[in-house]
Image (tube, rainbow, N blue to C red; front, top):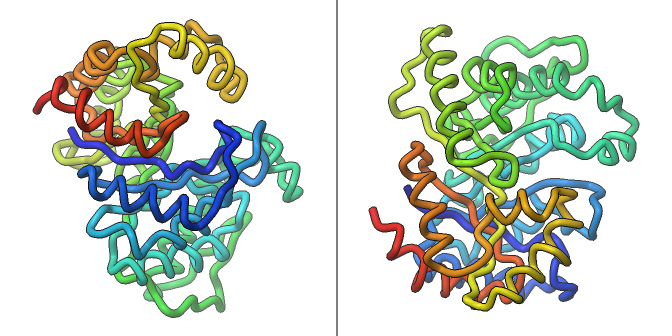
Length: 310
């Protein structure tokens, strides 16, 4: 199991966004040995949210050899053609380091903002994934669906990876979601604040069965757990403040639930949670520092990762 880092796209600590801040964050993550850098995607949210694909493109020069990922991008909200164009450029300019995580998103506000029915999100997502692959390959017949068509659309230049970047499907672990992952995905992306090590292990077992049903080999099918918010501190009052005043209202989840799922508190406790995920078969954890982002990246590497081992 290895670790990626989320770009700080939410205004969790009230600090202003600057290009220098993002560049310094990417440089620090690469220097601390994180294997990937990711950007999430929302148009509107409960707090201000910096545009994910733009931020990811802006820091390419400081990402070294790290993989790049969207965790997740919203092809239904953005439209598959527009998203395919943006992500093809990121993959091309990065030399083929992009992993495209996609999902419908959990915010009905995003759909209202672009005038698309929230209830159509799953049917549209199925088509959007197929449209992305067709647009990136540039070969074969166009995709024609109920909602999207790539007929007559040629998006050059194409991505560096041929026939296109791998597409991972986001799912919180439902049966129907995991069937979609098995049918359409090149990998599975789970959500840290919507699962536990036990639930992840169960879902992974279900995914293994679904992959076999559709004739795909489960061994080597990659997974990752995104949005693992963290704040390493030995001061209990500080960890309680992070849960109560920052994460619970931002994520709209009960504090007790988040306290058990996220990495907020002493280094040893956080390492125990990560070791449980490693035992459950997680391949990568995407970490998101809540405050003091550069210091927390270093603290994680110095005090938590060695305790997890492996």
